[in-house]
Amino acid sequence: MYSINIKGKVTSKDKKLVKLEMIFFQTGYNRVSKVLNITGPIKDWDNASQSFISKSSDAIKKNKMLLDLKLKYQKIAEEWEEEGRKWSPTELALSLDKKKGKEMKEEDRSLSVSQMIDYLIKKFSEKEKEKNGKIVKSLASVKDYKIIKKALEEFTQKKYNKPLSVFYFSDITKQFLLDFVLYTQKKGIANGNKAGLNQKLRKLRAIVNYAKGLNMHGADPEIFGCVEDKMKWHKFEPRTVSKRVIQLIENVDRSLLTPKEVFCLDLFLFSYYTGGMANVDVCHLTYNMIQGNHVIYERMKFPKIGKPLLIEKSKLIIEKYEGQGIDNYVFPVFTKKHTTEAKMRNRVIQISNRVSKTLTKVCNILDIKENITWYSARGTFISRMVDAGCSPAVTAEQAGNSVTVIFKHYYKFTEGETLLTKMNSVF
Image (tube, rainbow, N blue to C red):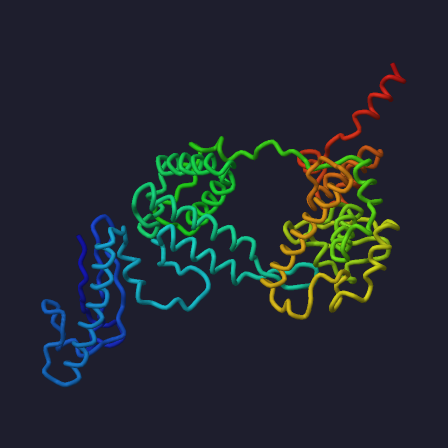
């Protein structure tokens, strides 16, 4: 049950004029009023007929404007009712407005889950931050929100035969979460993976948390307690390889590789030598980050500072590509056509895929059985440093991590045979 009416009352500034308000009502919600930019003599206004009773051309024109506006809202409400959408008076009152600001308005407190995600996508698309002297946007966050929205749209349509647009935060119940978990698990089993359940639940909880912070009706992060075990991070198996494997890769016959593959191999080895620097950080490395025998940079994916030392091997790689990169970039990853952040991000993905393919080829040449990727560099560097007796704190600083994180996610003992020999000599 809903209604849309126009009420008039005396304005506070001029007792001779009427202040008109559109009153929106929906069962289960408080009435919402919206002041209209139409006024006239208070003596000519009739609340019963919701119109000006004067026969003047001005009154006739204003009555037509009021009727047209009311019919527009009426049409939107009828469409929502036909869709089976759950809507609020606040949402209807704002449906014809154009948002003038970037931030959520105080009265806009009844967005659907889909609208909330769209709001966050827009917010993070426009959000800028400084990284290593450059202004970048939160494109990774935007991608994550798009992924969860697509997953929820598919789930609500297939499970409930309803579009995501009709779901509000009050509909995100324990049963909704349990249904989503089971649906995602079944999809993962069919595809031979986990379907990203952990990440999707965490992102959905983050959305609900954000909505609660904006006082969205029904937003309750506490209900995620029923799926807490599904949100725990699984035991992380580091992609660390042994010293022997790295030495084999370093000494591979490069005549068997193309020039592009040689470049990709150099990027991987440089990453390994410099604390396991992430792919995006290697690609975005600029000369101003090199200070003496150190590289000092803020990691692109995390607000952490990495301070790896430049050993001779890494210096030789830098010298090899000196002058080949555009602008101030150390490596020739980007070209003049990579003019936007999105294009640069896609270029990093392209280069990362090439590095992975190159490492696969190198492993096949050397008959190495391990699955080595660019991400193997960090764990291998950390494990090599710790096993060599270097301070975990110093190692963590070079990698741009904490001591806790390097042991939890990256360290792996790979010299089992060497340890056995030492133990036999001791005992």
